[in-house]
Image 1 (tube, rainbow, N blue to C red):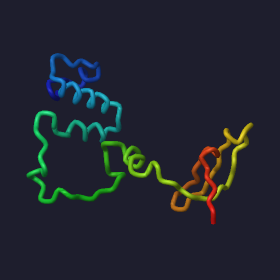
Image 2: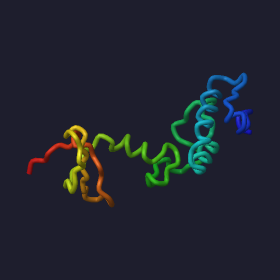
Image 3: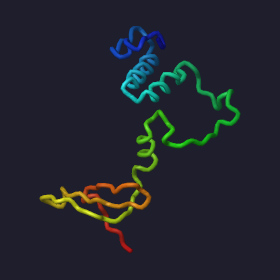
Image 4: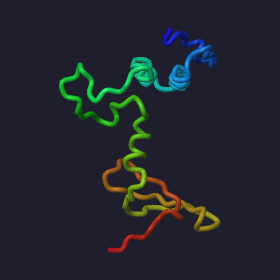
Length: 132
């Protein structure tokens, strides 16, 4: 039971007479039910910040600046973090194969990119030639 609602109530979407902040928190936690178990645990453990004014720094941490690996993050999903940080970056590589298609707009290229463990598949319409 969290914020007066059981997991069953959250799953069913029963919100009752809770405040708007309780509603958004409940919806967030309801969505978490379909996530990885570790993600669910992290969301349930997260404090409800809707009732407290934000503080500059937590009082129980000697240094608030930390380092951690992206694959150690539970919320948001690591893929979302990578897309927000690097989603618009240009990659470069060597085309090793091209799919058969009726038109060039429908074709795909298989590209080896240095630093990646496997080739990537990219629509040919998004491929830009490099000048050397």
